[in-house]
Length: 343
Image (cartoon, rainbow, N blue to C red; front, side):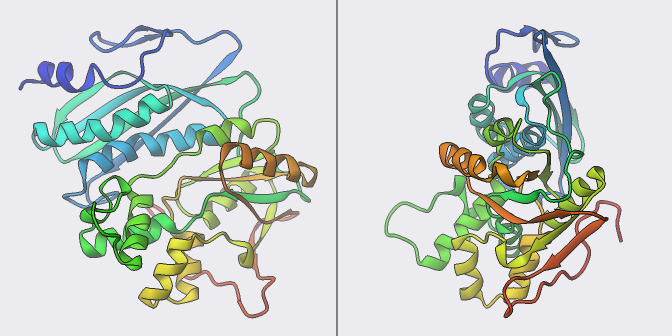
């Protein structure tokens, strides 16, 4: 198929249908109607073969992740996603790969009411770029700046799962372990296989906390998307706020699959803690809130079916200090957190 036929077959039907799209796919550019009283939120991210995923990674997972990582940025701003542009650089146009890629991207786009309004197709080394727009009531966006000493520090979900899943996926070739995050039909797999599948699925099919981000408007004073690791991203947020933080490593939320698999695989407690603090690709939200917001936050989490955990406190100064309220467990952070251009 030529480029026009690829677009017509695979991409023109993709995504939600929105009344605020005046002109979408098929012209030189899109025309979009921004509602009165809203600010436009823009973000973009790219997945590059050999950097963000290995050759042969499941196309369905790549479609999901390409949008999910951008949705997480929109969530961190307290915004609602709206429109996306998609740029695909492909070594060759394989229909089976494209069908799987779209099958991973489409459900997530429809779930979050995201319309695909344009993009680009080109030949070359495999890379996937999504540019995503969102809307937020004027003056209400969450930012990294805004935290104050005396506030509490929180994180959603269970950081570390994705990093463990990435290691397992890369170590074992992994694609068979998490077909859409579901076990093979038939008899229940051994517990270790079930835990492995759950962790790989957290890497290949991350869950952006879009509803939580929007609901944190008016409750959180500052917020950041956790993509490069909880420790470094919390530090970025506190740095933007002109504050410091103290993280109690005994309070870090660790999922049952990670605990169980780590024990079965012989991973040390120190290594598991390292995954939670600096593993990256969690796409959770780290945020700050005043102590009097605690009950409202827990009520919100219960309503949304989300998990949020208070992991420390905002303090005066600079940097993030690790402590432990568990005398038997000393805080540990070895090596650098992720940086595309760091050594």
